[in-house]
Length: 412
Image (tube, rainbow, N blue to C red; front, side, top):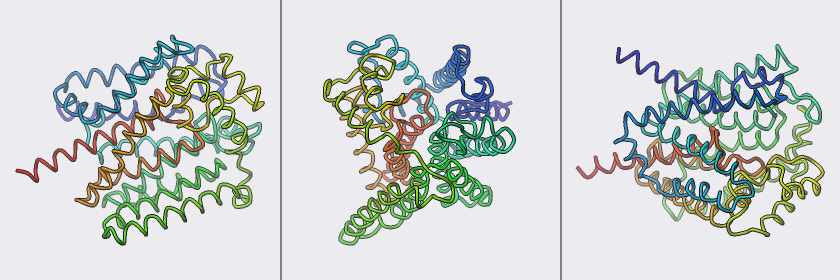
């Protein structure tokens, strides 16, 4: 009976992760992402089920969960600021509703960190993204009217996702997970490498240059974090500095020359419109720099957002940069809390790898690097119902929980 309950819990966890990642139901029930009010209700119902699932299991293990919860107070402070921003929000109802959704999302990340080891979490995510990859191929090959985009993105694969850049971002994450497991595991290597190369193929089919660039950066960061960080400081610092400068230069060159480099797979439009959008967003940030416009309130069809839409002449759903969106929502207060927590965890990860390398610390650094890359041209920071934000919470809490265990063993 105990084995059955454990298996059932893992199955429900996988289903919840699939809901956060994006399911094949999304294009089917919405007639190819033509969203109607009934479709929104179905999505909200599914996410509400995940909140209930995580809260129920958290309640059963509340002592352990409370211990993990206390490991990083800045994450929860950031959530508190999101909720408090309803007092100055452009749309307080939306802010309150989405802050509750963000709380449910973060509680699921807390549940993952308290219930599963890091390797177990990543294996569950690998199952989900493996299933997603298969479904993307099936949609692209068998029902291309759903799996392949039309309009300005004609010919670009989007699979089971609403847009090609979402497909690209999702499988940069998938590639990072498959690569990490393949390099730190001895089991199922063929399957893991198949998942890694399938992720790369889907990114190519999506024709997203920035996603492809990010996909290629991940193995380099793994090498730097697992090898170079163990060198003596006199050697490590110049090497890391040089590799960072060269890496930024090559990344900038790759993105700026994406149309030429990726001529064989078609034109990428990832950066189209960003050069006009970002200055317009910065102008709006300057009007309310300290507290912002309220969590998730700015892009809700208000007069402030309409100014940007009129300026750029396209219906921007967000700033297409996660850091700018946090500034819009929570101002300097919110972005400062995020950056402080981010930097502290990054530096702690470097220290722990130099002190005694653990998979949790290595994954933390790789994932934090992914967070930076993913939010340069897209927006996943502090998003409710976001797989990326769930893994951000779980990576930080899992790393700190593992560190506490290692220290207690070392001191005993």
